[in-house]
Length: 335
Image (cartoon, rainbow, N blue to C red; front, side):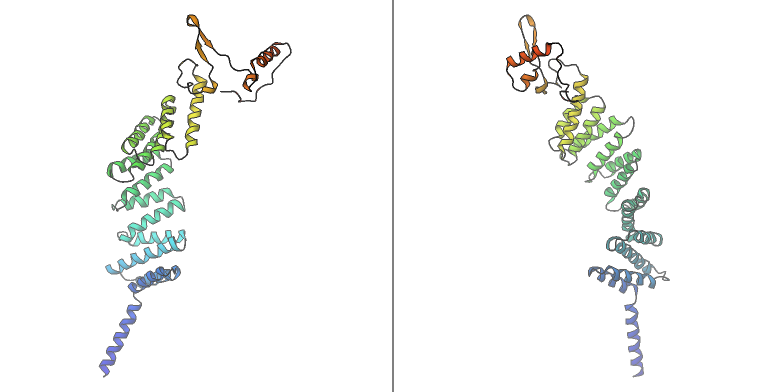
């Protein structure tokens, strides 16, 4: 009888230990998260870590990584405490560098450093460490690294990272984005704008249905305009107009280049730039003996619908001494 009582006490004691072990605390934490009780979940993760503090067994290392990752995620995504989340993610990396939870923890840490603290170089370091372990999302993480180098205005490194992505992950959905980013980086570097044009052209050729097509066309047009090819720039922009989400931006670019061309190119018969400016072109015809007849511009009377007689009267008045017409407002009639 006494032996049976001792056995019962041992069973009760073991049951009590199981209620306070790390796996049980982790289960309670997960249940609290499911029930939308993040504070309770955080308390359970902390209790699990306290129980594991002096345990150096391999199994304890597994539970420690789970508890630290869980606590960091609660701070980051449930409580919005970015500073505490960063501290716990870094503790996870320090104590459990090879754990699977640490790989994802580095990615989350990089996101916090980038968006909450604008520590771009710190974020790049974390993603680079994660990429060294070849995670499934390597192409996306590589693109993020290239993006951050662009934000840092380190265009040379951005170009290298983007080129590496397109070579290593040729079938990835991030290849068009990487080509666009690479071309942008090249366009920001002295002496490499021709390469930028080539890469934009590669994007347009390889991915004609990409959502980036109108943006690539717009940037390509700007490069051609800067390179002294205004007519070609206009052609490219006209193509971009078909699908560009902000057509007025493209139209303004076309108008600026056409305006510069009109100001710098002598007007002549057959001028491709001025041929479509119908409202501003005089009538050109041919008289006898090859004479070119140019219709004079309308007088102010004719412009508002006046008769030829009224126009002639206005011309006579303008010729009289002391008669002056009012000056036009600045910019009016420029075209």
